[in-house]
Length: 362
Image 1 (cartoon, rainbow, N blue to C red):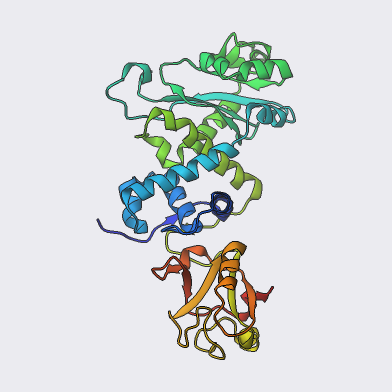
Image 2 (image 1 turned 180 degrees about the vertical axis):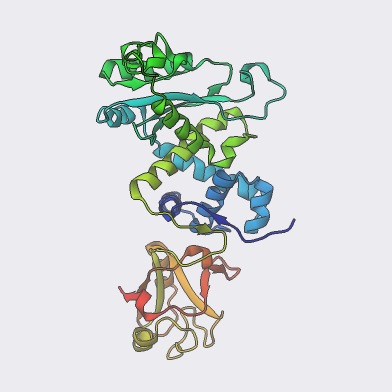
């Protein structure tokens, strides 16, 4: 399989959020080493969700096995799904809006052996989408079979009861007629009459359709090929990433080709004899020869700078100190974890040097 560099039209806030959550999980479960760093695992997951790449394509592109790619993406999706807002949280946001818009969408799914439950004119899964007046996502419901009608799906998820109980004005189309006072009054399409000589406004439903299209801008949701039990988590993961991008703003390309991003929690442990050189020239393996390496070697083991991913790993380097004297811990900022290479023994290093502006003595 041929591999080529590519890019993702996503905000870097999505990448940073997922990387932080993966880092926290690895620390919590005590992971010592993995084939990919947290940044690369996050990038793999975003590529799967945004571009719809198969696990075979991801495995080839990121240099891991097929099972490893599946396990990494599944782990990250589960983390994102937990962060999705609950129904109560969504209603709290909706209550602050002038009105909300409710609509259903049908992400296509590849179902052959059990066609009938997932067929409603076309094969898919029914997802109820709630947006604000400008079409921004507030909530996406768990997925049901495509044969389920919109009003039944909204009732089964508790959306209609929550809207009616909270007195939240809701625009909806004819599929929700009879759903209660909340969605019956604002929309002419849902049963109210328009002023004489004026056509019913379709702007809210157009905005709701736009929000459904926003979901399907994540190409994985254009043609689902996974088990139906996984689709709800996938939708929740996409919702989390969309809310992250809308609240933090900014839109940069998160590329498959590693670049320089705002990254923290990287450290370097070195002898105090190298302090003056590091303060003046940064972390440069060609200039740090005043003392032995942390493992006791006289010559550089790699053409680069070893770094620690977190305080626990930095503590491990302190314990194996073989420099013959005290050591310093330097904090390294602004380096993308995707640039790190593995030395074959479970430790990572950055090829080349790190400028003095990006290091700080702890």
